[in-house]
Length: 94
Image 1 (spheres, rainbow, N blue to C red):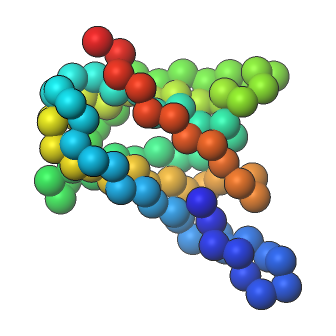
Image 2: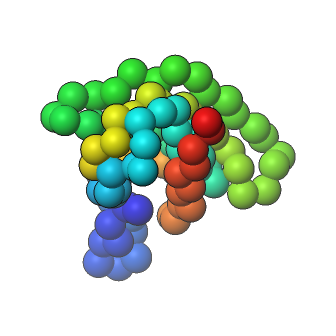
């Protein structure tokens, strides 16, 4: 999610991805394939996480964070990602 710079470097600037409204209000888990910091913004406010977990040596899953979200669009913001690319999954936990 980080921008590529001329010469093949990677920007240290954070990345973000918009998401449409989830079908229902509830707890949703955001999982990253690499280390990184996850923030969620909804209605112009940061959403406080309700739980988190991390794994080392587990291919494809490095960090998961849970958030209570309303049935409204939201933005996932990522920072401090050392990898050149990252996979992100959003799943409902209800």
